[in-house]
Image (cartoon, rainbow, N blue to C red; front, side, top):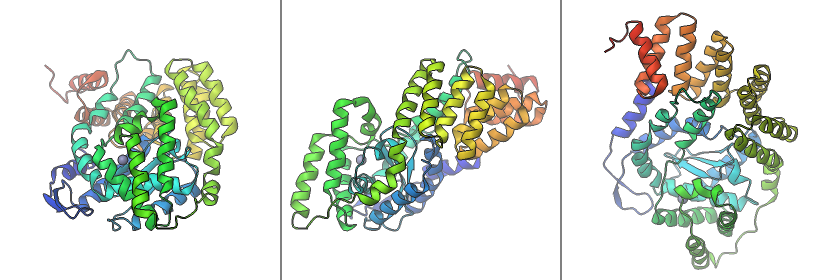
Length: 431
Ligand SMILES: [Zn+2]
């Protein structure tokens, strides 16, 4: 077991008994102490960020969102946590909180927002879940059952053509993202707390109502786009009505501030500008799933005309070229991507995979080791590290990776392959 997995396991298993809920003041069974909660958040945040296609590459926007989030968090019932906020680069419409105050909003959701008050409504709601310890409790429960399953999912049958491995790796990560299923009571509580923090931080709580109305009307038109978000945060018209009633009851005597648009528009300018490119990108992904690579390539090229600095689009174009066995073009695109965003797991993995395919095993190893540092214990990464060393006839090192693979999973073609090699080399006595 690697130290990373051991750390997670220890975090899950150390139960700290009763603690006082910071919001209600009541004693409740909390599975994690605050220190453990923060350690868990620190350990998981980078991996979850990678699972959501990494950070949206706009430093000004990242620090703008982080600053708004922290301003709200200072007004919360748990201001002492190490809060951190980021914008992850997925078109999926979602926002999520990890234990200890690590909070992400997706490019897809931020793209729907029109002012800072709406954004603060979304962030305030997530802070509400953290403050009321919904996250710590729920996360413990769900992670105990889910963690590791995504690793199994990434083991694919040998019949599948190779490009799928790249997509399944990404999908395997994304599948872990739905960590929470909040109850309706928890949603109501987070709504109330979020609006309270908004008002204390100088925002207009109507912004929260607006953001929910936006989601609600979009769910009427394109329900599939809200699936992920509504799985964790159950949505209802009742929530909107409740929020309105609370504003009336609690904040009617305040003179509510005007909506803050200027800074928001300035900071989301680039994100909105590349919005059209990502629309094409989303369509291209659908085409790739249907194996229509030619059409995907031309859409992705057109997306890059609008947004030439978007690493994720270069990576996906690389994958499409790779599927067409156009390795030189695939290599050019992955290099462009890594030059822009060196720390995107997906790109490092794909790069390692391309180099493996064209028999450049040493370069492949370097890429895959970087990938393994970004997201530890991914079955595909470990498997191809083993394969590369096997090709280089460094059997002892290859065996080390195949053993590590079998510690992660014993199912699927890759595990079987690793098992057979280890038997053959005398590391395991076969039946
Ligand atoms: Zn929620």
